[in-house]
Image (cartoon, rainbow over all chains, first blue to last red; front, side, top):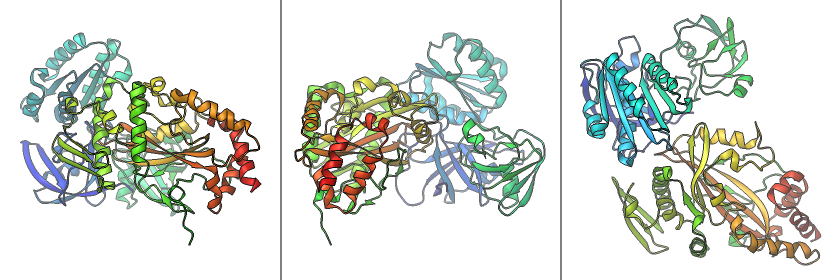
Length: 311
Length: 324
């Protein structure tokens, strides 16, 4: 069972029409646990749903766990729920997980933030600034979407390049790649097309894959075919739609699978498959685990018409 | 009710069953483990009657061989992470001996046992008299290793090791987990150390686990490192030659209490190794201990016996414990 902590909302700040920052502190007095830069917490809402958000504050000496949440108009109700929080509310929080940390041995850290993907990048920038590491930030955003821009300016000083729109980004990134010393690592958080562009640019210049890191912020479910899950031992049948994740469908049907990242990374929702073929899409399970009959239903789906699981 | 001598009552006796299994045998840390003689393991750092003497031994070893403490430059943040975690843990577990006060980056550490009071600023190396890991390493009796996680592997990139069996920090620094464990039988693909590494890499920040490792040795020396090889190897030869003598006070069961901690700020893994040695002559005091020791040694596969470096000693222990 995943550890959950009851936290109190200490402050809510509007950073943009569509973005609110929410700070959480322990309900009882006491210090706030530190965490590795680039970590995220899970906000539990609607009973058992969990949304993951990157922490943006000082990771070494935090006075709160601070997240900045973009209100999505696409029907993902978790962000709307967070936007309705008020100071003094209490919320169940899954403590920080680190899945996007800086690489200690990098000679230089090239950090790239796209839109609301600025959140873990700000955390990395604070870290590198505090430890005197070599780093720079490119922040690409739409005109007017200046979320955390002031924070980045304060933390980075002359090491921040702003890029408004695709063309400005292309020029800034190309220049950064030109001068990056051998042994540099690049980190991106943003929409998939940005991650793809950053990855392609670095690979073209011969960077090894181990030096290219990314975190996709949108838990977008890649569409797939419809299938039916048979939940053992009860034999309950649950239909999973083409645009729906398997865990979402199971939750709607009242079958609770513990989840955390919902991106196929953390390993929390690992589930035993007893029959059927899996279309594995996670980054967690080894080939060995898969051969042993495990899957990650937050991102993976069935390759057969039915899939039998035994949670 | 029988009372046992103190060094027996809190000894981490490693044999809980009658035959040998080489597993990762990992369990959650910080909980007292009951034995037939008492219990051990309620705290992660041991503050026993031998604390002062071990601290002095460590200082002497470091004065003689300074490269027993080593660190690669990229481990600076992880070292500070370890310092904060260890000080906080010691003060919480033994408030009568240690105090740790933190106000933002400003910290004060008090060690009443050693008469130390040190103010420092988190992250500022100039505020401590030695590199951070060595600073706290000189005030604990456990050997310390810091493992960095990158490229899907763990790397031993900093440490202070003055006691651990057949380790050499100067030799192992910068090696990956699998390189270090290369000689262990069964460590190959799918082997116990691959699984252990996978397990470690999935620990979440702040999680702590422990395991026991054991061996046999002659004499009660705590320092069994590669560097002190020329000191302890001759005593082994002498005992091995003494086939009919009373070896019960010369031969010792050596147990390493190892802790594995995912540090909160960096995600580095802190590996601690505490050493306890107990003369074989004490084993018959506790119901079951001598019998289980004999049956484990009896069922030990030859390659493990070789790896542990106990070939020859095991038969002496068996004949001593069964001659009674």
